[in-house]
Image 1 (cartoon, protein in one colour):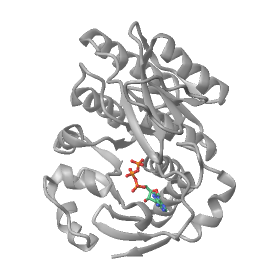
Image 2: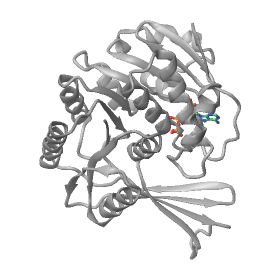
Image 3: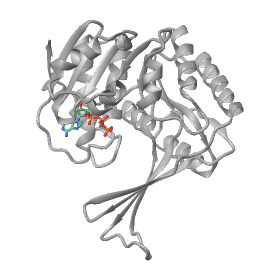
Image 4: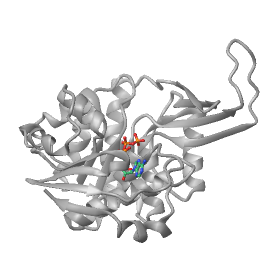
Length: 313
Ligand code: ATP
């Protein structure tokens, strides 16, 4: 079973406007509201790909209820730690081919709430057969990377494979902790460049040296996703270039999260390295072909899977 962790979920609201008037009233006829946050995109795609998946994390208030109601309506299992504070709304205003975003930072968690979540998480692991854990997104205010470190340590002790999809100093500090073991990370090129604090060349061959550094030695898979160019990956000491076919992209948002779902599926099924890369890329591609974020058509999976080319470098 896959357990997904989303520490700061949101209701993602999208307003479609012909024009956006500043300092005036904007009336909206087309509004969509969905349970969002990177971890919930992973959850939805994994569910659509047929995985047994449960979503956990921290939420609260009427927004938290909206999120759990929507997961229930989609037939997705969830078991969140509830807090007294409201979860957040994230608003995207789509106007004149542009996107203006208003993102709430969400609740400010206390020490007690942080401890409460960890207890909840341990109980969840005790009561279910989790084989793969995916942790996605940034942390809410009040929490530090230490929470992710504790979650991963607990999973490591139980032999659960961990995928961590976060960025910046949180990812950096986890990677630099020699006691932590990760099954996979999936930075995109900008995220890898940010961890390294240097611009990366356009040639993935040049990234080999970086990926061989001690920082990545406790992480079995480092899959650097490159949008329409596929990915460059390290598995243990081997490198792979992954090429994907040209496809008609409808909405690429959330493709990284879909890719994580594809990795989780392959880890759960103990697939071979080339098969894992094909599963990851296929899930990402299928997400770009759908209008809604964090959504795939599973009937197209096999056809695109066969078109992904993996070359050992
Ligand atoms: P996001 O932040 O939007 O979730 P990301 O930057 O983490 O995405 P990307 O590298 O953009 O991740 O995309 C992940 C995978 O999704 C790619 O490796 C590829 O398989 C697929 N993908 C994304 N964009 C495209 C595209 N334009 N054409 C084809 N496949 C794509």
